[in-house]
Image 1 (tube, rainbow, N blue to C red):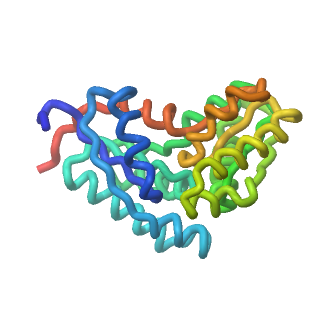
Image 2 (cartoon, helix red, strand yellow):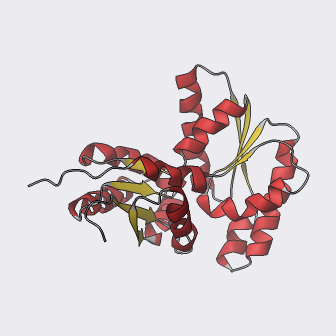
Length: 226
């Protein structure tokens, strides 16, 4: 690993995501060296118990450990713990990126009727709140609808990715009739995008994995502290 290249930590809460993000980093941020950290309990605890302070503290520990290990940035790929990523920013002198932030910006730019679709309830509020915050920054009057895709999360856990994607596509088709843009709230939903865009949906379908990863292209090497 070259000392002149930025080093970035990509923090996941789903074990299947490193193989998804690794090629995206090579494509969209080829100037950085990335390593991946996975802790599925961060998401499991948030799903089961809600956004606990102790979970936020644990994520902050990962962020500070990454900086102490020489990371020049951290990308948190889980939208459910996105607010915890923001809370950790003051703790380090390097960027801490939310994977869904560029997606939220794009959603507001695409229209005023925005649908946020998730397979987990824990993701809906953080993503919808982020969209509303960006709308407020732009002074845009938007209506945000949130929807859960029933059965999709269970299908993914059981390994039935085809059913997972089909269920997302069906729910997205339903929402598209009454909205200007669809937001897929979780990076793990990105594989369903091809099914959506190649079907009957005429409105933009946004996912966080590509735009979230592209943020890493802005990272530069930070001077190490003594």
